[in-house]
Length: 75
Image (tube, rainbow, N blue to C red; front, top):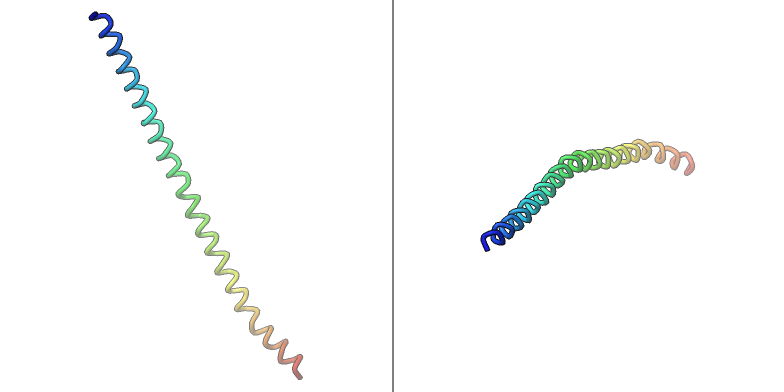
């Protein structure tokens, strides 16, 4: 009877060890993804913002030329 209790206890601790290993692995993967995806997300946001700003600058630079061209066509 004591032998069976020992086997059962080892089985329970083995399952607990496996569960702890799984949770540690999940936590490690979560931290790893966070630290890899966070910089990529920030770079994507910065690049998108820069592209939008560049587009606005290009549009502002075109407006005077379009006004001159329109004025010349109206003459």
